[in-house]
Length: 77
Image (cartoon, rainbow, N blue to C red):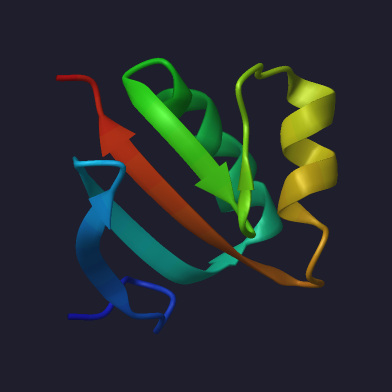
């Protein structure tokens, strides 16, 4: 499967929790999606687990790898 930006959507497990990963997410969409998903479960952006979420942290983390980011989300059990 691919997302609306042409990146791959995948599923997996991390520490026994189901995860969904989307890559090639533009920075602005990364920040918006990160804010929403952080409220509903665990969030990793560009390989960094984010235990605390602020707008500044999201902007910085989403920009770490250039124009596009990879987001991994795991829903709360």
